[in-house]
Image (cartoon, rainbow, N blue to C red):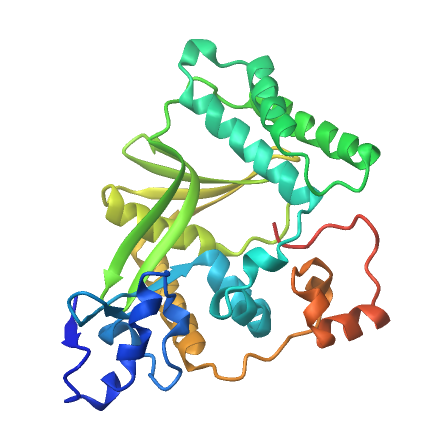
Length: 313
């Protein structure tokens, strides 16, 4: 961690940082650092000033797969979400997200129980307990019923085919590891199991099987190998709709390639100044559609099928 005086004036890059002090107590984000700073300067200087001590505290870029993929899909959406901080204001409840949240939560709750308490019926009960507390995003009772039956089917299939007695090393935890002074990796990993002499990372998917992006699993592997131990790692997508598994090995070579990919994406984020929109099929699922002319124009000529789910879940 590097520090430098906010008031020194000896470094031209520090000019103007004093005015950011108040933002510190309000949770200033990395993306909101003055745009004049380059990629190499921003993380190595600081997120902001410490009001009491008058110093700048170095902080690395918080790279999650969600964050990086959003930037690649649409830079304007990234800006509205992370730079402008409008995510909560424009957040939309959506049926497939509510269902996914409850399915993931029920599986988490199940593996926190003792082995003797775990069963197919208990898993469904856990899901329904969560559902009663959050029924957001459904157009009507009929749509809610469809998603409820789908969630029930996914969990029953899981309970009938998978080992409910397994003792995971971690379930549904938020992880963060510092790679160096400029980069940190973040991820919410659904499950980590002991797997013989190694570890098995599992990411549940409630959508239909699609061509997977290996970067997400490799980023999780980079986190796990630093947080736990350098044991051999397998990483899998588990598609709950069909019971299908897609698994790949995480080796030193694959993780090195993934880390280089992450660094290149972070460099592109830091260098961005315009944040252009990328109108396309995903516009129909964007929370910021109402304030994006490009997205509205695209959907006028390419209407979305009602009830259709996004291609990435």
